[in-house]
Length: 454
Ligand SMILES: O=P(O)(O)O[C@@H]1[C@@H](OP(=O)(O)O)[C@H](OP(=O)(O)O)[C@H](O)[C@H](OP(=O)(O)O)[C@H]1OP(=O)(O)O
Ligand SMILES: Nc1ncnc2c1ncn2[C@@H]1O[C@H](COP(=O)(O)OP(=O)(O)OP(=O)(O)O)[C@@H](O)[C@H]1O
Image 1 (cartoon, rainbow, N blue to C red):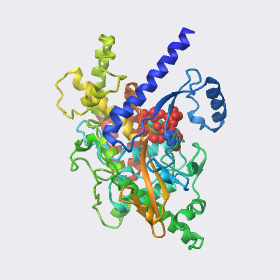
Image 2: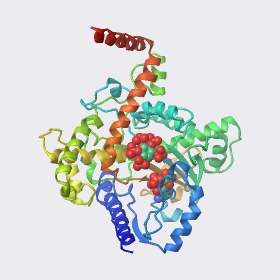
Image 3: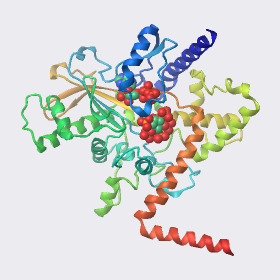
Image 4: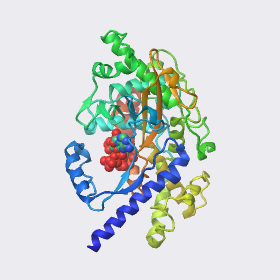
């Protein structure tokens, strides 16, 4: 009927927006090779219905509030990113793929931040405590995104090792497209390093020269961390927004006080954490630059969102002219390049900041896929990126996944969640970790009471 027809059109429009966003916006920020925008295809409805039934039992429970669309027949076709994207020749080879969801790699530098702690401890590390308290994860992770994004090999090594210890939803490993390490759903996490090493041994020690046992496991994990680090730091792409610098590197703190790596250094009497900086073309640099489009922090952004909201309440028909829900075309991209922070009180200024924030949110929640395939020395030419380990060599490709633009409507949720994360941390973690602070906290509370009485 006409209702389902218009629903189908709506879905088609939504998918078209996703493709356009990848093509016209994210490709510009990340570069041609890292982003695969996919294409829209039509599938027979019968096939879609069967597919839906087949995958339903495999879907994580927490995801089942979202239904698969079985009515429109439209679908997005994406390359299988667990496979190498660049070189067809290696397709028959065994393939290892590491998926990392790195999350936000910088500490807010905005003067709109109201709580000092946000300038010291990163959002991921604070959020961990709330997630464990809410039962999302059983144990906190020692991973800190600032270590991964530091570009310093030692800190990156620590971050990756921590991800391998508590993968949560930040790390998955696939062998020939099949998940061998990480969480299938929130309850079911595999973190057996011996098992992982068994899977990886043929990749790293093909001639079987390594005996098994704890030493072997450690060696293999080390080699794995090495190849991931090299792939993350490799510059395999250039892009239009490459010249765009969202923030001078000197702004903001380059380490997080809550990072276990940092704490260990402080315990050993060292107080300066090294951040070697990221090579400009590497995927981490690109991701961080896009994340840093959040220049005002949610606290500075929220009033601007309210300004846009107020305007839309008065002129709802303006929503499409303002391109809030697309089209994500060249004009949309051009507007994102205005990094000025001077608020002239206009809706245009507020809107630009809101859209930049949505891009940043997307980049804070995307995943990086590294696909690696063993290659022989004579196959490795200069055009193909290669990473060497002690006993093998790999050709690899790096892609970015899950680049759908975060909805405008999620901004109030972001604002609320930010407050919850910070308040939980201040009350339950910082106060307990630091008894002096804790006492100060109490004194302040007493003090407030006295003042109230007077
Ligand atoms: O807000 P965060 O940082 O908790 O991120 C959410 C993710 O949680 P995480 O912290 O990575 O465990 C969350 O991850 P999970 O679904 O919990 O694995 C989603 O990616 C969510 O995005 P969306 O709302 O589904 O588009 C993410 O929400 P957005 O903030 O990106 O909208
Ligand atoms: N093109 C791809 N190639 C290989 N693996 C993929 C691809 N797309 C997604 N995946 C795998 O599926 C997981 C979920 O992907 P994604 O979050 O994009 O799904 P989704 O359809 O958006 O689900 P939801 O709507 O529940 O968020 C990814 O973390 C990744 O492991």
